Amino acid sequence: MARPGLHSRQVFIAASPTAWLRPLVQHLIQHLFTPIDIASLVYFRIAFGAIMLWEIWRYFSKGWISRYWIDPVMNFTYYGFDWVTPLPGPGMYILLAGLGILALAIMVGWHYRLSALLFFLGFTYSFLLEQARYLNHFYLICLISFLMIWLPAHRAFSVDARRRPEIAAQAASAWTLWLLRAQLGLVYFYAGVAKLNPDWFAGEPLRTWLAARTDFPVIGHLFTTEWMVYLLSYGGLLLDLGATPFLLWRRTRPVAFGCVVLFHLMNVRLFSIGIFPWFMIAATALFFPPSFPRQLLAHLRGWLGLDSVQAGRPPNRRQMSRVAPIRMKRSAILAGLGLYLGWQLLFPLRHFLYPGNVNWTYEGHQYSWHMKLLSKRTEVEFWVFHPDSQTAWTVTPEDYLARWQARKIGSRPDLIVQFSHFLAAAAERSGYPGVEVRARVMQSLNGRSPQLLVDPSVDLAAEQRTLAPKPWLQPLMEISPSELQS
Image 1 (cartoon, one colour):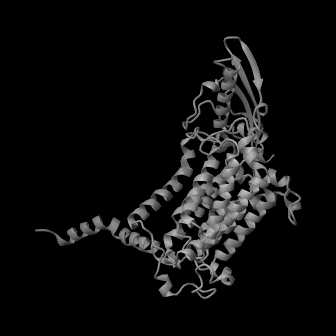
Image 2: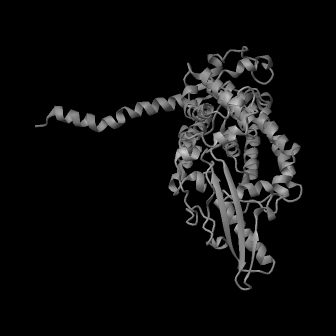
Image 3: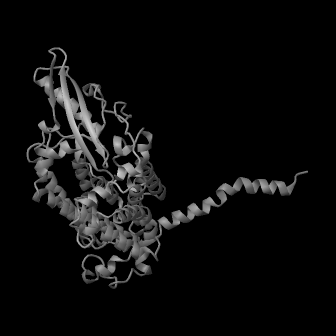
């Protein structure tokens, strides 16, 4: 005869792992598709387009198009993208002008979907042209511009909504806003995780940088004091790690946003990092309630699709019932969200697959949100040897490269290999086929004494570009925090 008590307990144990999880997942899915005010998406579309337009203007006004893509003798490509090369003739000027027009189109919501797609393709193409110019905020713009393609940010306060009233909507599914928040949250979080290293705990490289910025308004004279070095070092660490949770909590959100704004404004004055601080300030405002931009846009109501909404108030229930339509099924949206966010969660961790200190070897450093962690000084010299004629000569990066390229090559192994291949090809064109190329690369990391980065006995011309660990990289000889401070 069966024992009901035991049977019931077995059923409970078997079902319990999923019994509590299933309603949680269902609640999450329901929340992701709950209608929210579309105002935040509209605000971000305008801010994104305006900042990108400003960035494109900077390229023209500062002569960067010629400097970065036309004048250099060679461009350093990304692995797998050797086929991506600059456009000939005036092509790069035409491309950047087109990107400026597309940024303006995104800002005003004119043919928004097509404009976002073309901007993503064009900006990503320009990003892939030169690895020596890798910056985290360029990568972030590529990601955000890709996400913008899928967001219905043109359904209100846009030329599209005015021209085609049938697409106008005052609400969007919540996942559209949470996707942007998640992307920004991951940037802050991984920037904080990257600071969990002995150098940052010891105050480097911030100590070195602050010592050269004593002209900073009001508090600059304190930058050489140890307590200020540690205050800013640990303050930056805590801000990056705590920004997202404190921005999500309503009670701490205003203070957290104020700290984020202050942090980025200090970075504007301390470092030359372009549009990144301004972009992050604008984007971080997305953590406020979805209706917050309506008060900012109250004086413009009624022109591009917000005329039926009273200034400063969110849409009413009837307006919220009309959500911006999405042609994909929920399952497809959830799969896309899972794949994208899973990639963004895991990809920044790939540097743990490489041996050694990522800040030293640079393997896995890119795309990981490691920002403003390194102060490096390098001395680089290449030796070219032709075995048949027993001819040898030395080359410095400045002999061929632009100054901004030469500053990067000594700290990035993939660039070292690419330049070695370039030297071998140049020697062959000059009548010296089959040369060997070796390098002496001395690197100083965050105030340490210079150390050898590359095995000088390795023929780098024979090394293939690969994503695998490079056995010819020399390990970093660690020193104690006290030695680092001294």
